[in-house]
Image (cartoon, rainbow, N blue to C red):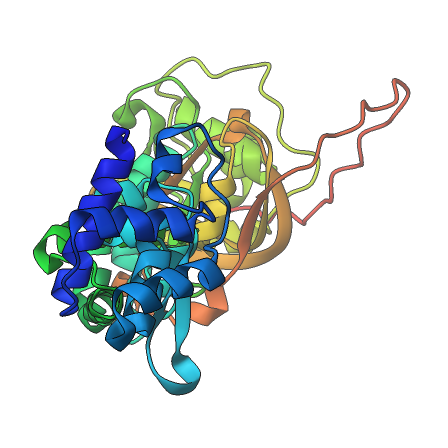
Length: 440
């Protein structure tokens, strides 16, 4: 006999003994031969093809001669052991029951089974009632506060995408698949019990502890493979941040970029005439000369101004609105810019080095050092470009400082679609002229 048949014979004899049926070693070979459709055990020594299914008629005849009191047990056991016949392992009860296929030999060899061709379907049956999502927000809370939204937005805007690592660092470790196993321990126990019942029925060896850990690992890997969640799923629809687009020249230090005033108050008469003010005014649609006319500011320029800097063709605010913003800005270091509360999902999708459309934005004065803020008129929609200033999230929350009704400031931020090249003969729109009141 070859070694494989000898091993099969030992397994079959052990299984029958476990079921209370004692047979001789030679009789075991007779049973194996009969199950494979061979007339006697001597034919096992010759080359032959193992059929797909047991010859139960021949096997029954041999069993009746051998042990007429245990024919059914012998036929069932010999069919399972001697043939590559698949057994059904039923998991669960009633309408929730399902089953998977396993061979006799695999019952006592979990490693072989769990790395074999039937493992995938079997694990799917065992894990059919389990659920795992590595990233799943707590729907019982109200999502991120604006303070935390601003913290996340600050990090996102400072780094190029994709932002998975930033989000993972912000939200912390994902939910482990081990947690899902702990929550569904009963499902694992049900599968082990089903295997044990099947082993008892066919007389196979079964060691629960040998199965437990490999089965848990296989189920856990299955749950991870089925999990299609991403760290962006942690973001809830109401999660927002306070965006500021600050009209400030690029490339300088923070002090050089801010507008300054001689006194604590940033009233129009007190602001210093320098390049930072000139640049901010130009983005709002005004020149230094126009500002002097309606503000009464007679300060000498603190530096050489840019003679080539041209204001936008259309003013964003009236002179009166600009005066109100400056008079109420309330700080000696501040920016003029735009303020809006936008969804975190908008910020994640932004390319900050491309033009951005901001909707429902408010012209404002913002002091990032001392945390001052004052908002003015709303603009339904405006396109800002990298050369117009700096896009950032608020360090100090204007909403917290001013007690805002936040929904009034809800807007959006989206990159502008690729723009067509302008016609060479296109004429810029004429600047909207607001009356410029003379200072008293």
